[in-house]
Image 1: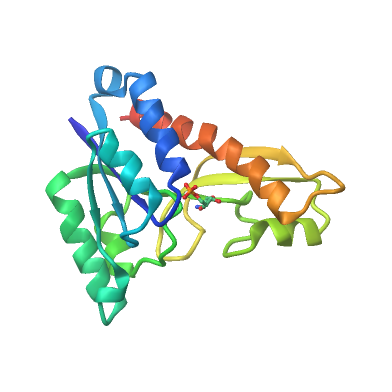
Image 2: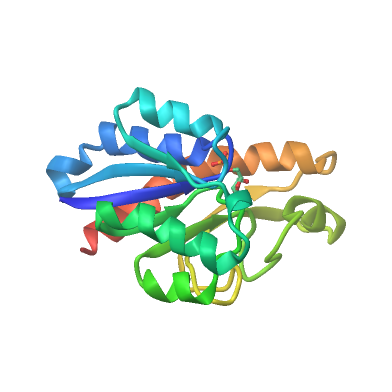
Length: 193
Ligand code: GRF
């Protein structure tokens, strides 16, 4: 079985979309893949309850319990390893990972970023797109490398930027597309074996 481990920090709406796609898309039968665990750096992350309700293993490793990034990442990896992941999926995971962690999972570590990379890496992507006068915006699923938000792109989704958009209305439109994009990108990754 190819185990997928998903890392979240909050709502976990992308994680939920992936869990639902795995069920509805019969990933176990079609690809021999399943969502094996959902982990969070925040014990209060709402997504943990969603995963628990579906019988998916969960764990919370609070970054506040560790003095260094390296120590936190080592504890995170220790929580991931029992699931022997074929794929580690960052879904609204709001931590910058150390090079050691990224190298450990290189080639099987992906992220979703709410912009059309390489445009707007980093934070506040919707506000920046509106301020730049962009006519389109969107989201990108990419391989995670040591350079933040810059790895090889797996797939993207585009949405229009409307004249009266605020960062919130644009974020909402992008998030809706993320919930289609991420499962599609993972299915593509699984299909390519
Ligand atoms: C989304 O904007 C996503 O692009 C970013 O985190 C935000 C929240 O994601 N990675 P989720 O609802 O926690 O999946």
